[in-house]
Length: 485
Image (cartoon, rainbow, N blue to C red; front, side, top):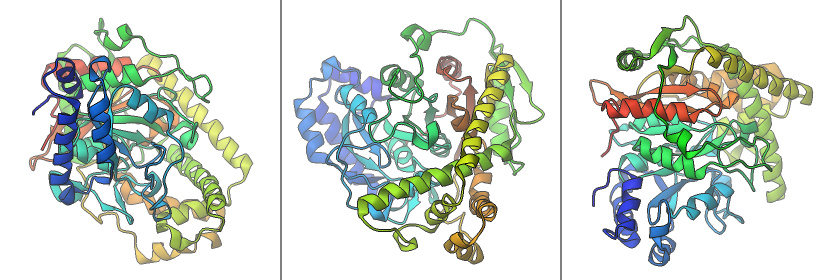
C-alpha cells in the first residue's frame, strides 16, 4: 500500500479502500523490518494499537485509522513508558495523558509507540545513553538529528506517514533538514499544553509533527490548534480560510546566508538558500539580502542557555522529590549534569531580567516583520553530522563533572564551550523559539552525495498562514525534495 501522505491515507479509510487495522499492521511490519538498523522507535504498543484499529470508526475522524508515533519526551500517555531518553526514567510510566496527545487521539490517529530522543531533549542529535544513536536513513554513519531524531527517521523510512515531535531550539526543524522532511515549529501558544507542563522552557518548546507534505502540515495545524485560555500564552486560532488562502500580493522576503553567531556556513547550505531565492524571485516576490541577522545572535544564545540552566535545575528539584533522594552525576549524562549544576547558581533577579530580554527580542522581531513578511535562512549550516562528531575533550569533560566548583559566569562559559561545535552546525533555529515565532524547514536541496539540507522560513508570531501559502507555491513548482526510503 502506497500513500502520498497521512491525509491520503485517512481518505482511503473514509472511502473504504483500506481498513485501519491494515494500515496499523503495515506500519508494524515496516517498523519491525527497519528499526533494528535505524533505532528510531524505543517503545512499542502494538497490541493496544491493533485493538484501537479494530474498534475505531475512521470515517468520521480527520485522521481516522492513521498510525502515528509519539516522541518519547513530554508527550505523555497514561500507563505508558515515558523515558525522556534518560536512565533515571528507563521504567517510568506516565500517570496522565497530555492534552497534546489527547488531541491527536481525538483526530483518529492510532499510536504505535514512541521515538528516540536525546536525554531531556538537550541536543541537536539523538544519541541517548539509554537508547543509543538514531541513524540517518541515507547514511548510517551519520546521526538523524535531534531532539526529534527518532520521529524524523521513522517518517523518512516510511514506518509511519507522520510522527509527533517537539521543538525547543530547533528540534523539529533540524532533523527535518537532515532527513529531507517538512518541519513546522508553530507559534508559541498555538498547540495544546498541559496538564504535565504549561510553559515548557518558558514557552520556547512547542509540540507539533514531522510530515511529508504541506497538506499534512496544514490539515494537522488546522485541527490541532487551540486558543487555550488557561495556558500562559493563549493565541487566537487561524480560520480555515486563513490557513488555505492564496497569496494576493508579492511578499517582502529578507534572506541571510551568514550564521548569527559568526560560525562557518557550508557552501551547500548557502546554495540551498540562493536556489530558493531564485525561485521566489520568479514567483514575483520582493527579495532583499540582509547585511546581518536581525537580532544579536550571541546575546540571544547566551540568554537561551541561561534559561535552560534554571529550568533544568527546577526540573531536577521535582525529580528528586519524586525519587525521594538527591541525584548524582552517575544518574545522568555529563552534559545534563553540567546544565543542572549551572542552574543552581543563577539568582532570581538575573533570571527575571533574562526573560524580560526575551520580550525585547520578540519586539525587535515584530518590528522587523513590519518591513519584511518572511525571513529566509538555511535551516542548518551543513548536512547531518557523523556519529560522535561533537565529542567533548577530556579536559572539558573533567570541568563539566566538577561544574559546582565554578562561578556562575564560568559555568555559563563552560556551557557555551560544551555546545560550541554542535551550535555551529545548527546556528539558525533557536531564535524563533525565544521570540515565539512560527518557523518552517522545507526540503529543497540535496548535496552531490544525496544528503538533504533544508531552508528555513520564519514569519511574524501567529502567521503560520504566510508560511503555508508560500510553501504551497514552492510545492506546486516541484521545488520541494521530500526524501523517502
